Image (cartoon, rainbow, N blue to C red):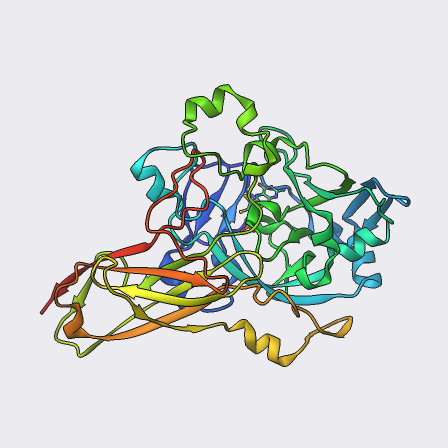
Length: 398
Ligand code: MTE
């Protein structure tokens, strides 16, 4: 009974909610095996309502408006973006703030549906810089935020939210208005024909099916900006959150930057490990917020008493070393100051003898600001940004 009959979807995606709206993540092992760039058909999906239907022949005429605290409000078609703005192609990892929510719900049920650890994916996004689109409208000096609004119609009106205006104006942050993903026009689930993509920030701020950009001196007043994507204080219960809007209207609790995360993909939870083998490889991915790299990834086979250091690889460096991303618009340098826009991969080989007493494997990361992943869960009513040590159980055989 979905209203999304026009939307193609890969049967391998794991559905997280009932028939509607559509929310899914890929199987964790598939996500890992597909490597740095996630194939579009496996990219996680987070929709709040039905997916807008936009025929192929009309995507060039798709129009957004730029309004609010600006001297020159204007309307902009997708064809004009392609013709008149510098076009970039940038690898960016998106993450849903609800990633790993299932573990929180198992401890104490909150208000959101269960995500495993695969609510993250990486694509090459093509488009222009959001800041270039805003600059053309000449924002007022007192403006502080850029509101973004989609054309979808979930239960509480069009989905909208905001980020700080100076982030959008900062070319190093690579905040994009994008129309292509991995070289193909956007798929309906991912914002066809136009969306915002914000590196290092929770996916909930990357508005899909973009219709409006509003420059303002205050945070967005959209329902979804208030009542979604917040980490409320841990003592707030579902009942308290439901009965008192003041918890939601405190902008201090709004999430912007992602937090530090590492996930074990190999072995999978409950995987059988053959003790007749000599060595065993433990591997997974990690990501962090605000462009700050993960500086170390540590593995424990004894529940956190002792730790081993894993090797970390940032595949985006190959794009960085190439120095530019080739596009229709020419050759342009991007990603200079934010030191990472994407996830990293890590691995560690351990002699099988060291696994003999282990019942599980634990990972934690530390970023280059020496922030370390916490040992304990910060339970919160929306169960967002869950990033306590990631653990897999292992079963030994032979
Ligand atoms: N934009 C609109 N218009 N409507 C939405 O429901 N969901 C947001 C964001 N942008 C949403 C949206 C959330 S919570 C996330 S995590 C990302 O889109 C997910 O992007 P994806 O589905 O392309 O992975």
